[in-house]
Amino acid sequence: MGKTLVWVQVPPPAPVTVTDALASFEQYRLTLPQLLDDLWSRIEATESRVHAFVSLADPNELLDAGNNLASLPLRGIPLAVKDNICTTQLHTTCGSRMLESYQSPFEATCVNRLRAAGAQVQGKTNLDEFAMGSSTEHSAWGPTRNPFDCTRSPGGSSGGSAAAVAAGEALAALGSDSGGSVRQPASVCGVVGLRPTYGLISRWGLVAFASSLDTIGLITSSVPDCARLLEFIAGEDPRDSTTVNADIPPYSRTLRCDLAGLRIGVPAEYIGDAVGDEALARTAHWQKLARGLGAQIVELNIPALHNALPAYHLLASAEAAANLARYDGVRYTPRSAAQDMLTSIITSRASRLGREVKRRIALGTLVLSAGQAEQYYDKAQHARAWVTDGLRRAFHSVDLLLTPTSPTPAFPLGARDTDPVAMYQSDLFTAPASLAGVPAISIPGGSVDGLPFGLQLIAPRLEEELLLGAAHAMELAVRGDL
Ligand code: GLN
Image (cartoon, rainbow, N blue to C red; front, top):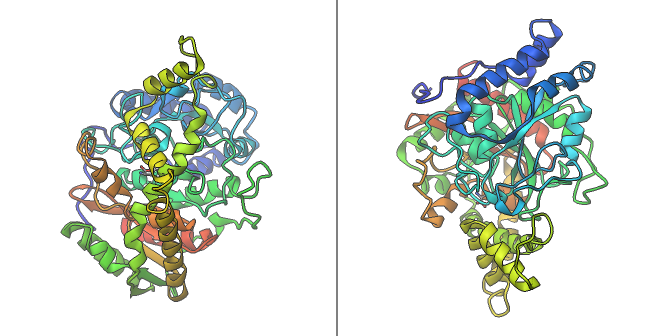
């Protein structure tokens, strides 16, 4: 194990997981009022420094509603929801002035399914505007801070969700991951973050950023929690035609404590080129742990991976430019006072969208424009196919891939704010699975520079059972529990 993690400004939370809370309810050791009380005391103690939430539900209302949920599997437990996922009870702002007072008339399918299982919406979590970013600094409502060190970023764009779970303000949270937005904040906040196979979780009610990449994911404090919640939300949805018609296995009942018989591929060169010595030593340590659990480690060279990051940013920006065209200052938001339509649209977009969003719209529009598309958009599509094929071939010889989740641990707030290229580097290891539509998970991997540093496992399409099973074994080994 590396150094013990030190909580710099916020004390560590009581280690309550969804699984523990439900077991404690069962054994009459915990009641919903006590749980709500614990969570809200924690919120009172930390939220002014962490700023994980954009809006919070009224705990008394959760308490009242919870009385009718006691017989359902999730028994009224509150869960946090990223603020780009539509809920009928609180605003859905996407961290943007464009949606400052937007009230969704419908609820996202994943939220509906969690509600049907007995969960409640605790609050909406902060994010980079429209989920574009890796630091949660690009939120119109101000940055979220990393609970391990409030001078640092919690990652992004689901930084609010990751920080809420890490600080013990929420048991678990929903996030969204297009290029890494669940995994990277989970990594730098020391929690678990799952990006599922593209199409496993319905995106009905997720505000679109880059439609061919967007997924809804889970942020939890343990792999069993992630597996349990996934069982409720995964599966086909007639409202989202990209969802897959697949049987949903009982993920939480097939978790493993070993990696016997598994071949784990490590793209060593790709990792070595991007991370510092301490992170490299950490990666070597994970390989040792995996071998100790019975896995065979296979060093791989997947040249296509080097193209994943630029391809992701070009394609995501192109799709974002198209998706964000709907924000015309007429729908979703109070109209500007301008007399004619065009001035009204220009005024709203100029004043209500933030710098990073504008940068992506400009980049996306450029790479799609006549005369440029062949050079940029088409090439990026080819690179995406190459990355997808590279991963598909790798999975002929290995069962899973292992990398760090992000090249570095949490960086100081402001450190990459003026350097978009440095910010985009955060997605180096997460972009490949996004482009290929395959599932990947970040779990706590110990520390680098005294800060949490996540380990990423990537699996073939729809192999969540394998992925979560192996992640659980690694989670226990990293913690020293095996
Ligand atoms: N950090 C990536 C970006 O800035 C990923 C965002 C996401 O997954 N929503 O685009």
